[in-house]
Structures are given as structure tokens and as C-alpha cells.
Image 1 (cartoon, rainbow, N blue to C red):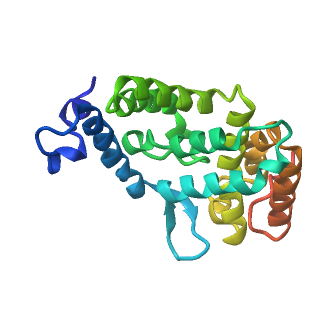
Image 2 (image 1 turned 30 degrees about the horizontal axis):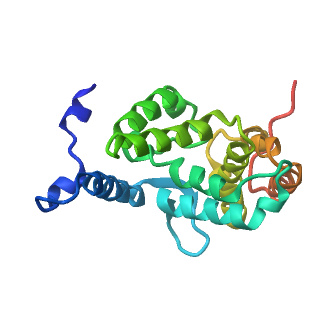
Length: 220
């Protein structure tokens, strides 16, 4: 355990809950207060409705809503409620690990390890049975072995694609990033929905045609 983790106290300790509170509820309340920090983790994606970047809590709500609306396009039957749970949990570890921009290769080094350590720390704030269940859901999303996890990952990649389209490029304009890089990073959408990947690829192609992303230089 590093020094930062040793020195970090749950936010709930700022205003301790009263003595005599049921121990299980105390743990659950502590976790729920802790995850309020998700609202402070900024992502790179621009909002459509305001001139600022979105935060992780807004992103998590938006991708959960996308499941409700777009589940019919999954190539495999999915449990909508289960998929929503995966998405509500998937970015909680960024409270401690921070957001890793999709197109920042250097920042991505060690990402899995950082996020696994964060999951170990965060979910253990809960009662043991819930800690185990929520950690298993987070692992399911990361491993993408179920139809629900694959569709959840697809929503996680499709949502910023829509925001970048509305921003006429957004993070597609990141220095050094080409339209081919965007296609490669978003291709995971096709693991869950051929229809949504066809639509997403069309937006990327049209964005490239309009100059909202860079075309790869021709090969010599």
C-alpha cells in the first residue's frame, strides 16, 4: 500500500455518523458518500449543452440511459438492468485512479494496475457481501466476457463518439490522433452491436470528410 492510500481517509469522516448507527448502514453510507467524488473527476469529452467538459458521474448516467434506449440493437439478448449496473460501477475506480484519456498512450501505461488497486480500496468500504458482488460486477465489465459487459463497453465507447460529433471533432482533434486511430479505439462497439458500429463508423468517416479529424498520411 503506497503512502497516499495510507493517508487517505473516507470522506464520511469529515462529518462522522452518530454513534449507535447500524454497522451495515454505516458502511453503506460511507461508500455512498465516498462515490460522490465521481462528480469531480473530469473527462476529456465536451458537453453538448454547455461549454465545459463532462465529469464521470454525468458520463455514467448518460451511458446507463443509452442502454435503456439502444438495447434493442445488441447482437445478443441482454439483461438491461444488469447492464446498467455495470455502467454505473465501471468508472468508480477513477475516484482514486483518475481518468485516463483514450488517446493518451503514455497515460494508459499501468492503467489496469492502478484501477485494480483502486477497486481493492474502494469496494472494501462496503459490507463484505456487497463488496464482493460489486467488485465482481466491475471485473465483469473489465473482462467483457458476457453479452451485458460487451454491450456496456460499447456504450462506453459510443457515448463520447456522439459528443465529439456534436462538438465537430472534440477529442478527435487531439494532436497526433488520426481518424484511423479513432476507428481502432471505437471498433470494440462492433463486438456488441454490428448496427451501432456501422452507425458509429459512418459518423467517424463523415467527421474525417469534414475535416474534424486528421486523415492518416499516405504510405510512402
